[in-house]
Length: 592
Ligand code: PEP
Ligand code: MG
Image (cartoon, rainbow, N blue to C red):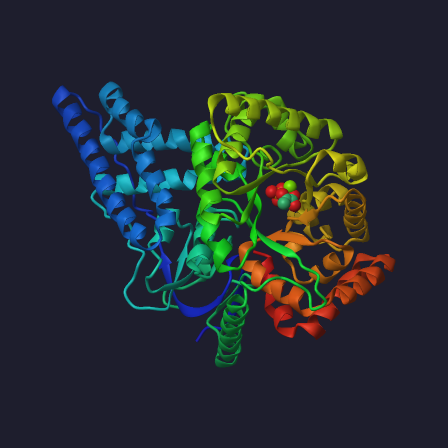
């Protein structure tokens, strides 16, 4: 019997499961044959064969979509996307042209067309858009499989307690797992923001992604523990380890159920300090999580994901529909729509895009929008129009001067005039806010305050810009410290300046969703927190259990400490002693 081994990856969906590995091989044998066509008859036959393959793929995908629609209607868009790719110019028209004009057989024509798409994608800087080649690849494999007479790989096995291990899983494949015997999955590729990870969370299937050599290391049928909280995979565990994890699994399930049961209760401290706990969302599909995890509304809707997903500039109608859906389904809860935060690490695929040496310091967010005013106006029109369907407020990312806020507000006024003339209803009083995520904005808070209705501190960026630590760079990840004394002072500075002007302050960076940071943030006076929906029940539990007075005393002590290590130790000790179950599980939930 082989020894217990441990692999690690990125925790993509929380939970612990024990099962047997089913290693899903790639289509290593999906080899396209090459054949030249000499006659019109041959060409026509290949065109027919290709079109029939497309029709069959369409029929298969439509069936799958209908099945998914019955249980998870919000996830059918991924299958819709694959249906669209099937008829896309690059993967549909181009192979037909190659058959007709370059006398290639269907398989080779498809292969050539796909290689070209792959080459185009590989040159895209933005990892998110580049990652969408997975969808194209999945459609390519489906079509090629049909052409060479091999059916798509069957993922969903009979039997239960199966943990899938694959190089990669397409979103379409992931949708097949809902309601199947698959209890978890492991992939070599993927990141936290991939569609596959988002779906895993929605289906509540624990997952670990980005595991190097998973296929080589894990033997088919091998028993393993998948810990989606820590990102650990324990292969061939012995009895002792199994028992320990089974206990952890049961405890986590009980913990999660218990905190979620009370999720809807208000987040007020025992001494009557009422806070608002909101959800961060990236896509309209996540709206159901807002209610399930007891959010008071949406504190950050990152709108750039729709732009990235569509891979074309959305029309005003597409944007409006997207926002209207979110706003109407959550009404009367408040929805905070953040205007486009493109640039930095997220790019639109634009022909005139200029690579930047330091994109995080480049033409990003509000700077991009004030330069590309047509795109900005289109989004502002859509947001205002959606405001007629519920409660909406808008906020601008990466503000670093008063002038930027004024220019953006002037555009809102212009757009309002247009909408009035066109007879579109909208909320005349829609609140406007500034994100505080650049040190300059912290310094200017007092001057920014009269310009806006609220502030929202974006700690993900504020930490990176304040400490000069790239938030996406593994090399310096350990120095990315939310409890750094400089960061805490900045938060205090914002809260104090805003308090003088009576402007409410929210926080929507990941820091807000970690129970380790919460008492200190409360003590500093942050009364609205927005976070990953899964983190909400835990955060509300902590708020309901500590008094504001206690939190303030903690904040005062921490402000006297000069080293981040000291502050971290202090915060950890508090959580460990006061909330032992949260200490064990809570940060893992928040970290996803
Ligand atoms: C932030 O910077 O904290 C934030 C919430 O915005 P994003 O993570 O989208 O940059
Ligand atoms: Mg930000």
